[in-house]
Length: 333
Image 1 (cartoon, rainbow, N blue to C red):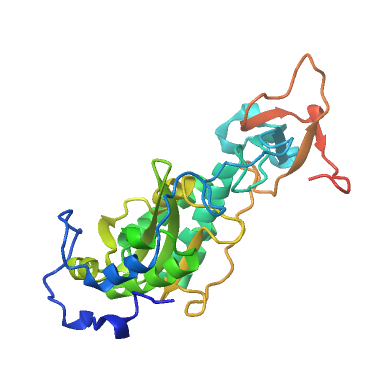
Image 2 (tube, one colour):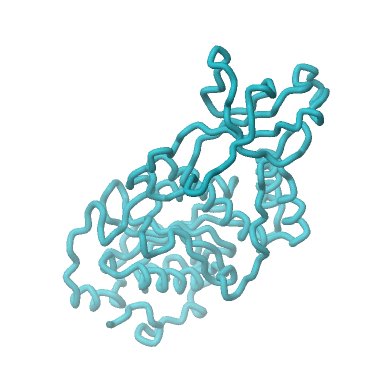
């Protein structure tokens, strides 16, 4: 296969490109596309619409029977709940947390949001580990309260010397037919040439339901040579800039990212690739009781129906006699 991205075939030397070329790619068309015009003559590019070659978006599958079902967990250690949080009404009460059961599958229409959240959390952890000290990462992830930990995460990103930037790389139309492995390898080369030292890439196959492959990249570096790279390779590079909320950006991009049985949605490249950067395993942030700090256990309601259990997710302080520990049986998830 003839590859248009090999420098030996193109004679491209980006190191000698004008230093002043940088920023967001202008929308004006260029006539300097000799480097890939030959390739377009060798392929017949079919029309690409809808789901193609196994690619879809999150939530396009079938949910399990109990996905989204309301479940309960909590703490029955009422002897340690006296007078906590300056609220006498909670004394002697069980702490009960209602939550919706999730299978955490990207194809599930009910649970794809929780899948995106888990993926975003893992990505945030790796990005943060690259730009701040290991001690600070450990300190932040020792915080058990999710909301408070999230605030400290974004604060750490904003104060870090290396900033996470968002860059969009659009695949040249002549290469819409290429396999994802080829597109990703080409993306990593282009990203390096435009000044990104490393980061993550999220593949998006569609725009407005039409096949239009592009990548959303969150990475470290300084974008440059945008015009030169477009004229030589045909990739449109748009620098969206520094992220105000890294987690929020990831969640949004994952919500309509490309998903496939045989390919990862999020991949890493450059200095953050798995063969170049090792990080400690992501700390498991288990939910804890706000009254005594103890670990939560699965609960089942055993009270009278004239005083029914909560009907939505949330935090509750309820009579101990209405709850007992749920004992799992083999085959139950």
